[in-house]
Image 1 (cartoon, rainbow, N blue to C red):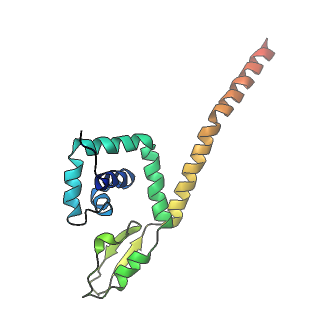
Image 2: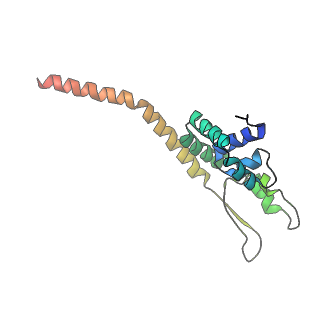
Image 3: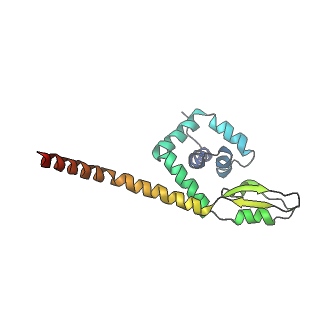
Length: 159
């Protein structure tokens, strides 16, 4: 089987982390029609196999959630401000802007632009909940052993 190119490998890594084909293709260097490139890449068996292997390497579902929450919580608003302040005749490379933390963009009838961001505090709270859950899960075997010991002691006293 043919070895993946550097760009294909990058695409697989970016796709495994963000699950957005267009974004992964663009970040991997497929800047002309990245959505078409993504569809072509994802239709290839060896690309899908590489993504599956990457998913298996990193507890994908939990790691994806954590990565997305971190991106929202710690994202820069610089690219959104760049978009907001751009002159109407100015040409921006929209694909290169990191707008992951943006939840909504509107152009009101009165003119201008309205940009809304996801709530950073909620993202941080969710990250904290994930961390707490992991700590509780790690301590669970210890608590289970304590409960079994207490139950065994109660059984001895009843005799």
